[in-house]
Image (cartoon, rainbow, N blue to C red; front, top):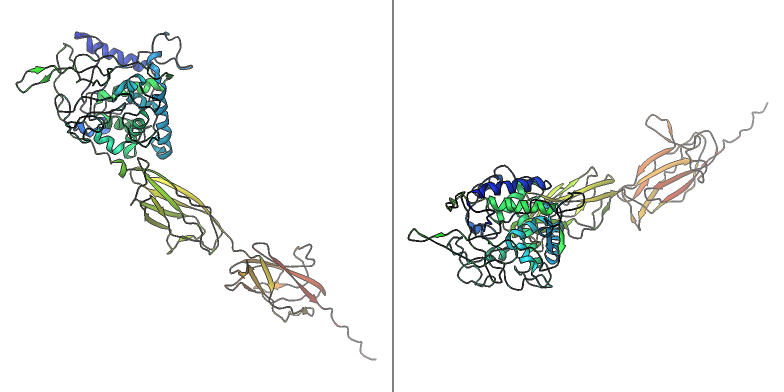
Length: 567
């Protein structure tokens, strides 16, 4: 909600010392969370990772006021995490109203499905919800998760707060002159217009609905490719919500507290933050100051008052000096949220063939909507020789209006085996999808001789007639099919024979097994066959890749007997 509501732990000169002791005790009692990054250790001037506070309307809340109550000095009594805690200490503060808790957990699951690299924890949403609205005013929501009356911050009119003129015609905040922070997560209308969500499926994006607001906050915190498991990214995310290092520390305290354990309480029974102290007076044109009281935020229709930062003597601290604006966060419509399979089926093809399936992905932005005109690069990796149409291993395609990007057709190489196709998009934090693909060897389901002549040879002679065969697959010529030719004595026991007909190698030595390949017309012409000195009937077995087989009979005639010469 713009500058800070501060709860005074004690009044007078002891305020600073007591607050420091409270923070130290709190830190000692809680489980470690991602530490504050260097540069986030003091004051509101310097933000984590080099970001600094800027114009107040750059933040999701317009830097509206927030509750600065700190968690109890003991942690929730979660089994295994702490022991012997006083029964009346901490348990109430650890309770989160049922609908509010459900909304935070639902938002975590939804974002995990569209932007898993963000690693959004629901406890962070709970921490922000605590300091922004006291968990929707203690969980006062109806069955749909909507507050019975709007939770509104003060008018951001420049009088002690940021100056943000009306952007919604009063549609969300009822103020047609200036904007106000709205709802359990305290979005200003201009930010809600960009980030608003319909998480409860009622067809409306309502900032006063805890489900809608929690999901909007989750997507907002994940913007710009942040990984919230990284301390610097988490700090930047929180500071983008409200540009104050004190705000960051308060949220961090509750985040660590909820990480140690929490429990569900009935809606409407959550602990409300302590009523704020009287706000610091605001300067008037004449140089004097005048109080700017506000009703308690726990009252229906009430607004959070201006902050009352105090010095150890009770005097007011000076207004912070202007600081440079933070690095701009890309709007959600321009931020890549996820890359998903757009229905690509199994990627298989025969060597030399074209894949029936084309690799297709769908890009979504940080809001989960289709993202158009996004460059997506597809890359083939492997040794099969497979390439995209046009002979390229890498292509880049722009996504269409529905977020889909489809790679050109894949042309299988001549080598069988497995390979992958990787789709990559985004620069800040690239998203990738990898598809497994395979090339199978060319196949034939039939192989036959092209003639039926008997193959006969005399001992030691060459078979005169050449052997030609044709391989087919589903009736079509099967080009480039591997065929194994083996000379055996018995086709029922197709082991290579050590005698009888044979082929010859380059040195003229006998070969009785050859690896061959059909030509472009599916034809296979065997090399010359020779008979040895062993007469008999032999068999040539030819088997294709795919299992088709043909057996050809070979006959080596016995040598003719000659009559002895007459005496």
